[in-house]
Image 1 (cartoon, helix red, strand yellow):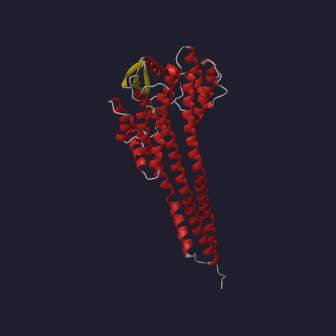
Image 2: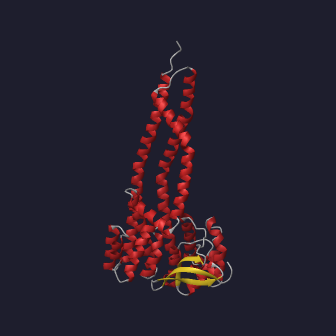
Image 3: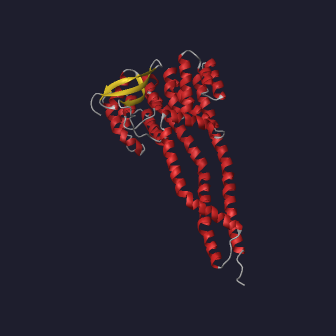
Length: 398
């Protein structure tokens, strides 16, 4: 970028208000530093031409490991500069492109939050917000530890979902391979043998071979249509409006919706509780926590609730009116507001909703496994019946 490039930004002010505008800087890192110096927390930064500044991100597992290592070093009493210097051999490889810039920024006197926001690797706004709050008063080591706990919980949830889906995926792959082997190779061989013997295929074998022939003739057009659909779908969901509509559609599905809603509410509650515990005021905490939901439709509803909170309404009432939380979460948040224990109640909401989301996934997997067994078992049984009929139809030539 040339010097003096205009950068459009969207940031949260310390008062909780969202601010949009432009700054002029040579690089996006310099633009973020200007916003931090003005007491703004940058949420989005775009070049003047409107293209988003892309930086590679970290997986939740790698982010959690790196934050935990940094938190441990800080808790042991090492200064921040020495802690960052010790990270090279302790953190995952995805962290390493950011380490030189982080160390250089801290040596120049910048805060760790500003260094993370300007790093060549994208750190989540929630992590940056927690670190910024810690440097402002709650303690840096405690803030990094809290960020590590949140990212570890997110990594554990993703790991649990992947582990639950591993067996159904293996079962589906094995069943598909078995059916392809029987229909594509074994049964056609029997058909050739019967044709050489002058025998007519039985009806079941003709049905299976006809279906296989139709699949062979139509797989390429179907593949082209599927790829085109994926490309168009990706382009649509890459837009803000398309992503929100897609997520709203997923929330409306009977099996998928409850799991997505519970997971999004759990992540939001955990992030909001951590930010409030670190001393971030409610309004800017809501602006940061909304990005932790992972669901564009829920994020929009939380944004609507945030506007109501800025207008003086309570958090529980605002979330309920916007449809941004589950009934359980609304009741617990209301109890926290009335008792003055909002942060512990938010932590409880996060535990309950995360467990509920995992329960929904496990219940769906328990239904999926026998369903796959029945489907592929039926297909294999049909092919086996066709093979047996083909075998028994062989009659010696008279």
